[in-house]
Structures are given as C-alpha cells and as structure tokens.
Image (cartoon, rainbow, N blue to C red; front, side):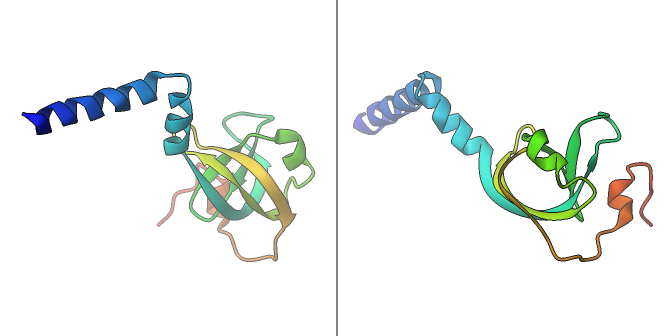
Length: 114
C-alpha cells in the first residue's frame, strides 16, 4: 500500500511541476538541445524572406534573422539551442566555416535523390 501511495504522490508532484509556472521551464528543457551545425544560409523556398540553415541532411529555421542575413549564401558554423518541436534554431554564435562539399540537392527541395 505504501508503494502505491508513494507512486501517486510522485505522479502528483510531477503533474504539479509540469503545469506550474516553473514547470514550463521543465517542458522547455525537454524540448531543446544544444547543437553545433555547419551549413549554408539561404532563403527558404517555402517562406520567401525567411532565412534557413541548410546542412547536409537537415534544414533549420533561424530565430535571429538579422544576424544570419550578414552570412547569406555563405557556409557557416552555428552553435545554439535547437527547439525540437518547431525546428527553430536560436543562434548563440555564428562564424564562417571552411568550405566543404554540401550537396546542392539539400538546397533544392524539388530535387530528387537517387
């Protein structure tokens, strides 16, 4: 009986944490991760005027459009916080990266890979 009571109490505490004002921080922490990504900054074909970072296997929406605009068309390395549920990347630092081969197919959503 004590084990069941303890489980209910723990579950109740977890619900309080998730739905309390401070609990929002818990949910945000579960939704985010620190990343370092290399890619090319380009204009999104689906959202004209919005900049995205295209890496070799993913595209990331960029939270700080003003800072990213200075690197448009350039290969960069961005470190930041990735929000997994939205795909939004908050830029903590951005710098030019050494040129490497990134498939241009990643830049063209209509291109088909063999």
